[in-house]
Length: 613
Ligand SMILES: *[C@@H]1O[C@H](CO)[C@@H](O)[C@H](O)[C@H]1NC(C)=O
Ligand SMILES: *[C@@H]1O[C@H](CO)[C@@H](O)[C@H](O)[C@H]1NC(C)=O
Ligand SMILES: *[C@@H]1O[C@H](CO)[C@@H](O)[C@H](O)[C@H]1NC(C)=O
Ligand SMILES: *[C@@H]1O[C@H](CO)[C@@H](O)[C@H](O)[C@H]1NC(C)=O
Ligand SMILES: *[C@@H]1O[C@H](CO)[C@@H](O)[C@H](O)[C@H]1NC(C)=O
Ligand SMILES: *[C@@H]1O[C@H](CO)[C@@H](O)[C@H](O)[C@H]1NC(C)=O
Ligand SMILES: *[C@@H]1O[C@H](CO)[C@@H](O)[C@H](O)[C@H]1NC(C)=O
Ligand SMILES: *[C@@H]1O[C@H](CO)[C@@H](O)[C@H](O)[C@H]1NC(C)=O
Ligand SMILES: *[C@@H]1O[C@H](CO)[C@@H](O)[C@H](O)[C@H]1NC(C)=O
Ligand SMILES: *[C@@H]1O[C@H](CO)[C@@H](O)[C@H](O)[C@H]1NC(C)=O
Picture: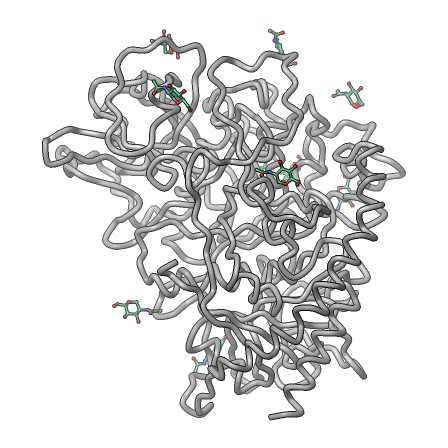
């Protein structure tokens, strides 16, 4: 027991010193129109199952009038989820591709859902792990290129295009208008995108059924309508998901009076019929995307996105700050490590089950047919960041929230790695970090959801953790953004609405097969260190990975979500990585159990999420 404990600490220290920087259906759809549709219907709850993807925020980190792109990608995310019958982590289509590449829009200065559907029909689209949202369009350094469509970033070399991006597409798109047509399309096929007039009553909405008076409007906005209902006073309403953050409206949603064309909501809706590209795992070389040749050098797809993102002066400041950060982090490590060790040991809450009572195959990706795993993320976009220690924690906790709630009528909670990095809750992009310390800080400070502080892969060097580091958002514009409006600054702290912080109530560290299996089986995914070798990174394509190393030197963190056994009796772990969907088996990999597994079993940590706080 004692020596195992020592080993775990050893692994953690090594991971720290290596800086975490590796050397590099329609089954559910009803085909015939139903003469009688139900009085209430929502894709948030169809026979107890939620088919809605997470709520996002188009106004962080920058002011961007991209509701048109979000209403389309979110509706399609849901339609994919419906067609896949909720199997597997959600696929999240990239609104960034649309604001960079859809020439028939005006990018962050506005656009229409119809042109977005047309773009996807003609060009296909990639997911968020390929092309994360930056709130920058083709005018602000994010022109359409093979890189903005699917990239991966590294220190020094910058970003390069991937030639193995998963692609998503639609078979057709069309318009609908009027209550009856809209209901038919939603009920039979999934959420739709609707253009609305953005009035002050809409922008100021907090809860209830919005029944707005006619107000002057100059600007339009788009929503994704996911269902409808009727209250006890027989007021009929639509249920729509907005893209202004989880803190806006009713957990990111709004109910708007139905049947009266309020806000013009029933006059300009559109939808896409999703195409199944995932069953056959269709990928493509994103260099097929119309490429601006000036971005290509020597046949390589290296790109200067890094340079574009960071102006020269910004880079100088970052360079300077990196040294300071290192100091701050080393101080905090020295200060917190003994404390964290003693606290986590004091819970004495490590679970040890009799291994013979555990199944030989178990994964949170499929517990009696139900998937409890949340979406795959990518720490390496839109620039390089050694944030694995944070991703291993947030992904494990997101899955644990889904497991604990065991309620399927709420979209997945996606936690903010950027807040963890901004506030130095266990490390930084440039220094790496320690998951156990992150769990400790999450017990003290907590972490917001991603729509408060979307990932930017960026270090923040001030030793503060105030609202500016935790939750930012611009306001939805009340007038059109013109071609010359400066929209380049980061949005301010979001203080208008309260926002939730998720906390852990206890945490600890474990090592070895028995403790790992016991913890995963009892409470959910855990975070572990590994020695992420070049071979794993560059050559793993699928199957059970194994590599013999004399002394594995942990330099990376992953989340372990289950285990299995082959027919030949070989045991393996099922592991979630944070290198995008294009890496490994849709972002996951299998690793040999017991030996030659990059040191996976040396040191792991876990946290218990507190649903009450
Ligand atoms: C879009 O994807 C489909 C496969 O679903 C492929 O047949 C088609 O060629 C792709 N279109 C483009 C422009 O790459
Ligand atoms: C909307 O909210 C703003 C503050 O955010 C306030 O100044 C304004 O009076 C509100 N307007 C209405 C019509 O409620
Ligand atoms: C609402 O927007 C439409 C265009 O989408 C416009 O024709 C109409 O005049 C607007 N209504 C108001 C009250 O501004
Ligand atoms: C991707 O496309 C580029 C340019 O057409 C080509 O050089 C490269 O070999 C392709 N990669 C694959 C895996 O086909
Ligand atoms: C990949 O892109 C090429 C070039 O546009 C296209 O011809 C091909 O159909 C695409 N394949 C798939 C599977 O999308
Ligand atoms: C390609 O990029 C260069 C440099 O950013 C720009 O001047 C040029 O207009 C772009 N060409 C196209 C076709 O977008
Ligand atoms: C979720 O609830 C169902 C029905 O009550 C139960 O059978 C199942 O074991 C629960 N799952 C988890 C992960 O708690
Ligand atoms: C957060 O702290 C920074 C640095 O001290 C300061 O510039 C900023 O105004 C603060 N933000 C808030 C919302 O307090
Ligand atoms: C703004 O820029 C877009 C894209 O360059 C262009 O299509 C549009 O005509 C411009 N609008 C105005 C009012 O200049
Ligand atoms: C475990 O999974 C493998 C394939 O992944 C399967 O062959 C085997 O039968 C499963 N074992 C059990 C006990 O379900």
